Figure 1 (cartoon, rainbow, N blue to C red):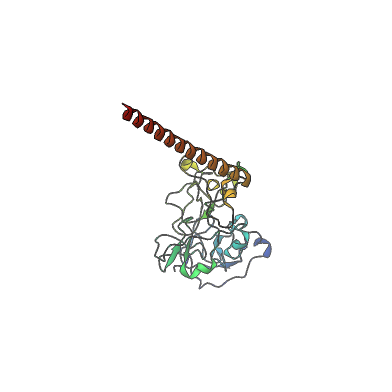
Figure 2: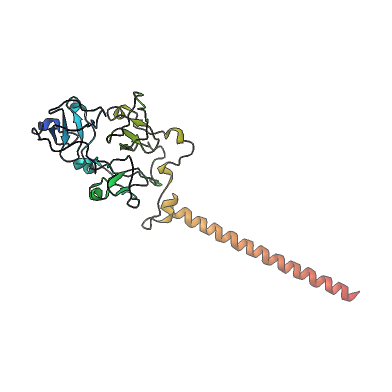
Length: 277
């Protein structure tokens, strides 16, 4: 796996604990011996000695000037930030070009990797045990839930389409050199890590609004929930519906039987009249 910077440089000591709060990164000052890009602003780190910091856990590289504005959580705490974990739907192991691992933030070209077929989460095969189960919820319908449900953006960091523009500042927010930028997996809007927090929390599905079926309209088969609950009707109304259906069928059968008896009687009378003649 290609690293974002040479790790042969000596660490100059970790930053103060006060600067690691919130995002969970454990940054140490680093000297990079080849071109390296900041994962926050996507600019190159210029200089010779101690020009940036790197997280010892997830390899997040950042400028000294960007330290105060880092919002991307470290993979060491990302699992604890998920309120409703949803498992990913993994593809077969393969090689992906121009993609980065969402766990270790390194390139995928040099080794086997997997991809979530639902939410575009990429990970090395060796990193699979450390992935964050934050896939998209595609079926959240429940009868007792309020109809006016707010649908939120589902943000995924990095691996943006080429030439992606930030919907907030209109500047380029993608990078081919590191895992940077944010993208909503529902509506497809892209933004910088510092800009997406300023966007409205509700997702309108963008250009897909007319053809996309929201997750609040779908449900998955559940054997532990009665059918009347899934359909949103009470047991009494279902019983009444069955009774009405049964009564209707009985009436229909009775009508058919009476019609057959009437036809038989008319046929018998006709035959009697013919014999008399």
